[in-house]
Structure formats: C-alpha cells, structure tokens
Image (cartoon, rainbow, N blue to C red; front, side, top):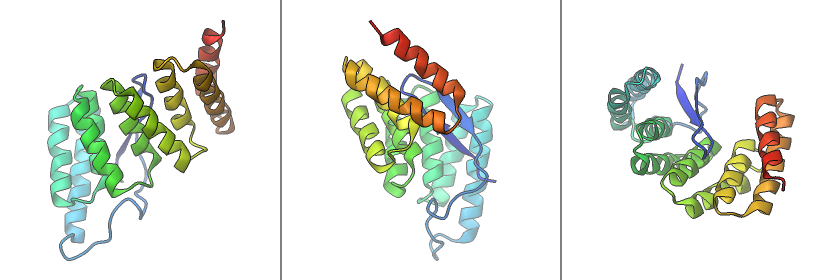
Length: 195
C-alpha cells in the first residue's frame, strides 16, 4: 500500500489519509534508469516517511521522502508528502518547492494544487494562492476543496461577494458528496459573514 498525505484548507486544516493504491498517472513508466527495484525501494521509503510523519518525527520523515525521491526522481507522491511534512514543520518555502515539483511531474492531481495554494497562503502570498486555486477549479470544477480554499483566499483579500459565491459552490459540492461536516462548517461561515 502506498501511503499518501492530503492537505487541504488555507486556514491550516491538515488531514492525513491513506490511499490504497497509486494510479498509473502518478508514477512514470519503469525505464532502465528507473528500475522496478528502485520503485519498490522508493515506495518503501515513502511509506516509512508517512509513518514517521504520522508519529511527529518530521526530520526523519523528510529524510525518508528525500531518499524515495533520490531512488525514483519522478515520484510525485513522495514530493507531495515531502511538501506536507515541510508544511507541518512550518517550512512553507520548502513546502512550496516540493508541491511545485509534484505538480511538474503530475499536473493531473488536484490535491497538489490545493496543497501548493495552501502553502503559498501560509507564506502570505495570497494573490498567488488565489491563482493556484483558480487554476485547480478550471481543471477540476467539481472539487469542493478548491472552491473552499479559493473562498478563504478571497476573504483574506476582502473580496467578500466572490468569496461567498465560492463558499456556496463548495457547500453544494460537499453536499453532493455527503460531507455533512464540511456543509455545516461552511453554513456557519456563511452565517458569520452575513451583515
């Protein structure tokens, strides 16, 4: 099993989930320079990093993710996990670099956009974060996390009407996914924003 972090929310909410498998789009095909042995070893280091980060051993987790990347340089999941670990350590500049690399390797993963935008927002680079969330929405219009993150970024820029619209879209998309906790959270935020 490949372990994979998911971070969402500019407001600092970080969730950790385990993904049962890696899609074929996640890893590059095996070539002579990227042997299946390297991939297996990289997956083992990625899993070790996940376990260490879950235990709060962030420095050790960083080393494990970096070892996974050294063995399999096109391992976007390891870059994403490295970025989340750096973010958990408060090193958002390093997190941005790792998320950018994950996106360079696999622009087909909406989580990477949300993670990059969240890290940029944590650095106070709200305008850049907003652009990343807008790009995520352009590519994945039905992703509620992207709409929610965009709303938070817009609120940080005092763009209330557009933020309210993004919150309502996120709420509706979470409703479709039966995520009642998120629906309740957004409903409360919308009520708090009403004059």
